[in-house]
Every structure is written in C-alpha cells, then in structure tokens.
Length: 81
Image (cartoon, rainbow, N blue to C red; front, side, top):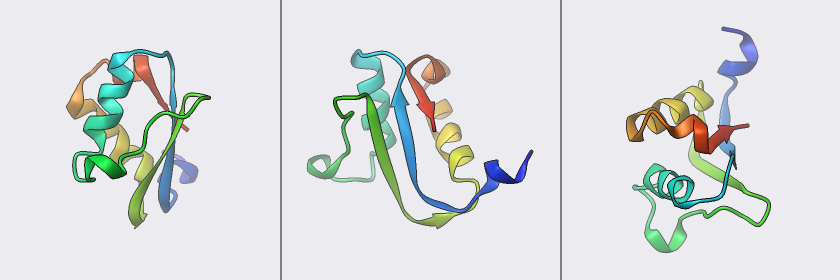
C-alpha cells in the first residue's frame, strides 16, 4: 500500500458512477449516524463530500469498508476520489 492511500483526511469526496436509486441508497446508508435533515446528497454533477467529523488515517479505506458492508455492488455505483 502506498503512502497516499493512508493519508490523514477529514473529508472524503465521492462520485456517483451512474444515476439511480442504488447510488442514493448507498449514500444515505453511509450516513446513518447523521440526522436525515443534515445528510449530504448527490450534487448536480454527481459528487458528494462526506465529512468524517475528525481527521483519520486510512479514511478512504474506512469508507470503502463501510460501503462493502452495505453491499458488494457499491463500486458499480460509487467511486471514492
């Protein structure tokens, strides 16, 4: 694993690979600890910026792991930038 994938980050940018209900569902489920009224939605260009609340090592890996828990089809719908 290279050093760039283990960077400390406090936000993660996601890109919707294709419009549709599954991408929206995954994004919503990713934010279960956030009140529904404060959840991030896909913007007009198909991007969403998720705040982690604090900096953490391996932030991308943590998001990928959480998405995998939600479904092994997540890479078809979301890219982690």
